[in-house]
Amino acid sequence: MNKGIRLKHNKNTSALKPVRMEHCKRATLPMRQHIGEPCVPCVAPGEHVLAGQIVGRAEAALCVPVHASISGTVKSADEHAVMIEGDGKMERVQATPPEVNSFEAFIAAVRNSGLVGLGGAGFPTCAKLESAAGKADILLVNAAECEPYITADHREALDNVEDLLKGIRHICRRLEIKEAVVGIEDNKGDAISLLRGLCALRTSPELKLRVAVLPAHYPQGAEKLFIHSLSGRVVPLGKLPPDVGVLTMNIASVAFTGRYLRTGMPLISRTVTVDGGAVPHPMNVRVPIGVSLEELCAFCGIENTPAKIILGGPMMGTACPDMNSVIEKRNNCVLLFDEKQAKPRRETACIRCGCCLLACPMRLQPLKFEQAALKGDAQALESLCVQGCMECGCCAYVCPAGRDLVEKIRLGKKIAKGVKA
Image (cartoon, rainbow, N blue to C red; front, side, top):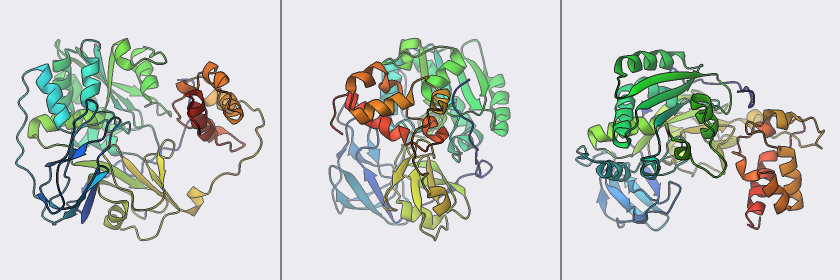
């Protein structure tokens, strides 16, 4: 890759196994934790629920159910969220592995599990698998984890490798895929060694398994770049990976698939990296879905209020206003920055240095996007292909003038679509 940027890895928690947060005082479960339509709550205030019980039904096509992540009493339930007051017991439903003897049963099982893309996109996995059936001839498992700080996927490769391999086999068998590749960056030597050894033992004429080592280079894990790096195939603008014969899935999503088909326990928890300058002891935590940042920070021993809170990585994460936000299915990291880390750069006039052009992994023109967005020129934005930007932040990161290019690009996308800002 000759585009993108080099970042400090800051993988402070890569050697730390996730510490399980056994229960929480309260879990707030949004009815929309995925791309698509929201769920419909199916429990009422005062009702006692068990961990793993459905609390939000999936009635629309592009929707997956939401399950209680703790046992306790429903305090409120509306179209936005279901809130459960924990009883401290973490009692679970009696789960049994789903019976999967056909492609249709496999898709139904994945949908019932509540799985969405655990790498951050949040697209319902059942819909992704269904769209790839009959088109994809290769499965690419994304374990690149190219953003700084985040190590949740790294730990997935080390701690749940058998579930990962079972998930790969189940997916490939049901979609009739004959080749699977795990793509991982070269800064994860222990995971590479483990995966290479096991894939060499499990590969067969029916399913070719291998590990591809990629240079640690941001944004190596971005879907289109990841696909090109591993297969040489190019996904055109407006097209999806299955259109070029590829199914891509995050490593945590694949491992969960294997685990669910083995146990029958739906998605009620996930591993989250907690790090940043305001964190005295960075760690990986296995948290119940719906736990508040306030309770998670208390569990991690964080006493001081951070200057900035980010859900996700420092490049593409989402800033949070306070500790009332909750962990959703698609959140893999919580960054708590101190004053020094949170201090914004002073924006000055563009000096036409071209750094943003050199850094853009999609070979686009961030500066021209900014100019067109500020003018409200929808035609120029369309001709410049603004929708092709993945908002990775490389341009803003390298800009010596501190221009907030990503914000202007997001504005430009709205203008190009005819949406008033």
